[in-house]
Length: 167
Image (tube, rainbow, N blue to C red; front, side, top):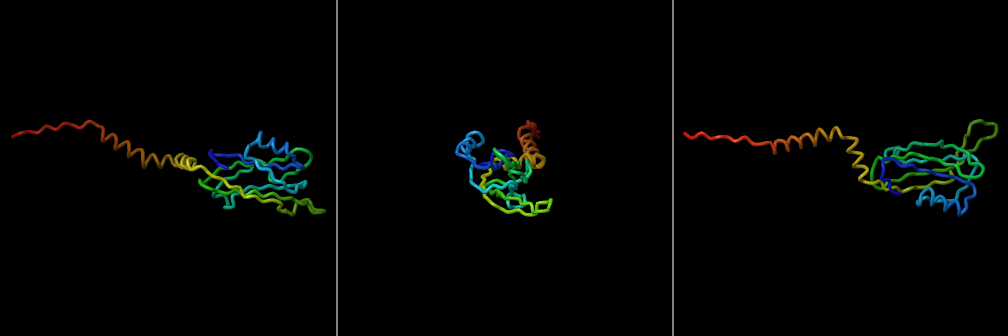
C-alpha cells in the first residue's frame, strides 16, 4: 500500500459468514487492494491498529470505538485516520480479538487475540519533503530565501560609474 497524501483512512470490517459476492463487492466498491481473511468471530470484538513504535512512525487516530459488537447480518466497521510521520517502507500492525464478560461481572476482564496482521506501507518521499517544508517554512524563509533575495538584488542593481580624474 502506498501513502501519498497527508492523511489516509484505514478500515477493518468483520462480518459473519462472508461469501464470494461480499468479497467481490468490497474489492469493487471499497478498494481494489482490500484483503479478505477468515477469522473466528465472537459477539464482542476488539480491533486495534498501531505502528509498534509508540507513535513515532504514524499518528493514528481512531474514528470508531475499538470495542464493538458483531451481531446480525452485515458487517461491523473499525476505522482510523492515519498520518505518516516518516517516509520509506513502514509497518502497521492490526490486532483482532474477542472480549469475554465473566459471569457476575459488569466489566470485561479478558481479551483473547485471534488474528494479527503486519501491513507493509510505502510512504512517499515527496510527502515527507512537503511535510518538512510546510512545517518549517519560517526557518526556511529566514535561512534560504532572504539571503538569496539579497544576493540577487546586489547582483542586479545598477553599478554606479566612477569617473577618474586625470592630473
